Length: 483
Image 1 (cartoon, rainbow, N blue to C red):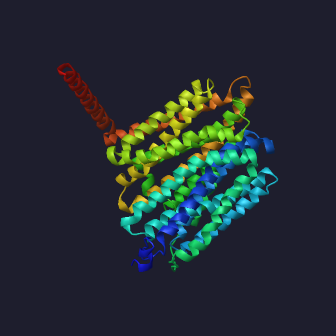
Image 2: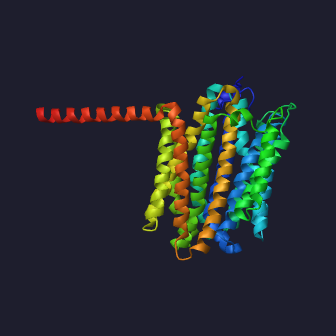
Image 3: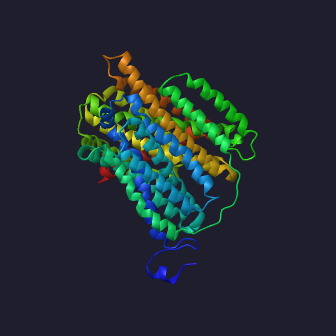
């Protein structure tokens, strides 16, 4: 029921939330900080590498450890939201985020810096996961799209401001102060405690064993990539045990029926590869600008990447409309084509001018938005209502795991190519590798598109477009002759 006080103040309130508009202002701020915390450290990687005297392989752990822990803990918060009050989960998450930030600001060794990023991820994921839960659980359906739009706008703005803010702070204050940005999230704590309702949780079965097995397999795989391939067979062994386990558990960590769905696996594969490639680019480009172009000013690196990030933020509005108008499959096709094209141009012409780097980053970022906007819509269309939320959660999990593994692989390749081919540009070799990997996404999409007649629909629309354009041009010529 809407209170008269709230109406007079021009604020909307649901039966569950006091001062809904105020609450979503706080959610916007915390989401913005969380996303900036993800993107601004990429710009600081050259300075952090020089400070601790580490190579690209070791530096990749700053991003990959954060991404993997963020993905897995986000699922935990989603599960715990039905057992514990959301306000207390947010309190715990923000305190973890602040604890990690304080550790990072005083970190005197590289291992301690990695610990700080892991603790940050454990906390930051609460804001990402629970903001969606709050919207779907407490906000009436007539306002739900509006509130989700607030969260989405914070995400896109955060990716735009992250590189610029990270570059400026690193250049003029030092990379340690990047951790200080997250301290602003403390502002939200009293508002969450006052505005969110207190609800008694209900007991639910959760597959902790499955989660631990899955997490262990991923960590072993990352260890195999980053240090020694001895860990790879162990990762495979643990993953096989995990698959056997989820087929026996009554409430498995991941639904086995989804893993047998060919369309679902294809969509998951595309999401994994695109995050793999995009996170690798975000990791590699600051190093390219610093070491290949001699750009020692970190603020200038952030400023170089800023237009591409803003282009992606602005394009997200138009891409969302295109998904509604033309369909997610068509928009996803554009993304899977233009991203490999951008990477290919970067590997061939990137060393010619810094303008190519700027343009290529803008194109690849917009392509990334095309694909990530389309994938959840495709799952919603192809999965039954029972499995939609589980499917989207699984998609997000594999996307962030793909991003973490991509950064680890890129760091490993940069170090390897530098040792094996010291006379060649290792960045070109890495970009070429990413181009080949991104082609796999096109092959997976083509396999998916055959069953959905996507290519046939696109051909039809292209033919109709050119026919209309031809008729319009012909009519204009006839009108000019008559005039």
